[in-house]
Amino acid sequence: LPGAGAAAWDRGHDLADVVGQLSARTAVEVAAAGGHHLFLEGPPGAGKTMLAERLPSLLPPLDRQESLEVTAVHSVAGLLPTDKPLIDTAPYCAPHHSATLQALVGGGPGIARPGAVSLSHRGILFLDETPEFTSHALDALRQPLESGHVVIARSSGVVRFPARFLMVLAANPCPCGRFSLTDGSCDCPPSAIRRYQARLSGPLLDRVDLRVVTDRVTRAELTASGARGESTATVAARVRAAR
Image 1 (cartoon, rainbow, N blue to C red):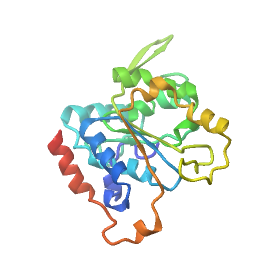
Image 2: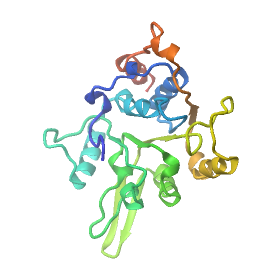
Image 3: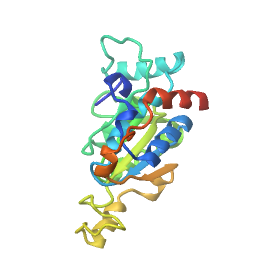
């Protein structure tokens, strides 16, 4: 699982690399400061993944108790880095949209193993191309979002894994990704757009506090002087002050 146990900032990702997207950058900062779940909707290439990858580095370092919780989960999963026996940064987990229900919430044959919701405990769970996940897997997220843990029952016993994470959803506006109220370049029929958008259930979206529409960055924005925004260090300092 990408980024398990490592903060995005450690991998050289800086928020200053994101050009434009002022509303989305503000939403990412608010999400980090208040622990709000976030939904980014926009066409491919708008920077949704870039923003999500930079969110973990905005979160404050884990305290002692949080570090022990995160380290224990990754140790059970066999994903504890050999060079870092104690994880002290917010984990980042981005499962592929083909991930099974067991890969997301935990389980599997034999001894139940932690899923993506537990591997992102005290960190970020990023679901790119969210409508491409199965509805069964997405609906299974509602319980850990509500309770902060996952309970997996087996004939041999019951396992309880922590799962208190900040969820970031990303989706295209339609199957082709070009739908816009102001741009007629989309060829998807209205029925296909409705079916695509309906894959995200109301009960799941009800748990998302922030919803932002991201547009493609124009060539003028890319080449404008001062197009780069504030750095991760600057925004992270505000997040720590807010918390």
